[in-house]
Length: 363
Image (cartoon, rainbow, N blue to C red; front, side, top):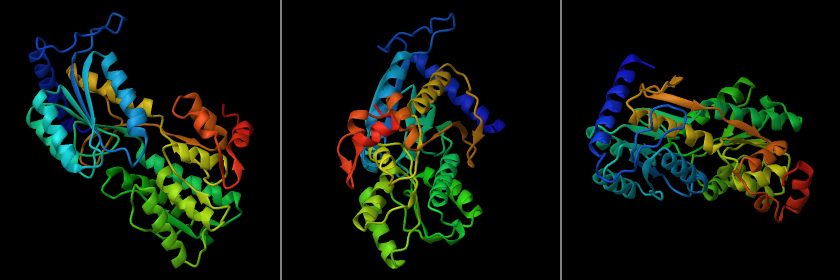
């Protein structure tokens, strides 16, 4: 970490501690002890804003739960709200939370809306954690986004190899994420690094989105424009991949290498039935636990150690992702991030999910 960023974070941490002390008699929960003889965690009010429910089911299904549980267990009063894909609503939520008082803010950006909220928090001496999506903050906590992209790129290469296709001759499409999301560029950077090193040149790259329906339309048009030839698709997440796969299914095109990330329900089902090569699994609890750890440290006036740094100097605490193919789907279920009952029901393109779950030990 740069010294200036370190000092800035420390100064804001101190301001947060003073703010916390000022609220000690105003109904905030009592401090809780770790039970191992260490000093109790500082109590206060943690304000969290989630971005939407459309780009990924993770925000409401997992992040909300894990952040709530972790912060409350640490003695925080917790206010978690979702902007539902509306930048105006995001700003309004931020104003309301700051008016009510925050000891720390943990923000998932949505189309730049977190920037204004973060500035208002900084003006009040409140430390801000950028969670999952990057913007200028005291700390950024996320998975290693470039590594996510590298894993996705390698997924495409593995799928091409399995199909006996030379990467240099392959028709590969890039279906990236919304460029307004700071992570999207990092995913693309990692993926392109791996794919171009193997000789891949994209035959088409429609404008990135986080929307399965739009990805389906965009891919269908790109596929038509390129004469229907496709060997691989770098899809930035499972939602985009599912849109692509619907086109492949409609046109009865099989054996295509398709990447993804998030290990969501449709992604796991597509992997088991052979329509998606793999997904990058980001165990949300690992990310949420790390963010809670950073929040506690800041409220205790400490400066957490960061192993990386964004270009703007923001300390970046990166969590390691995992690659999931058919053999690893059972591991996602075992971790509690997916339901076997949901995965193993019905069929995809005539393939029974129950049979595939039995084959790969998903139960």
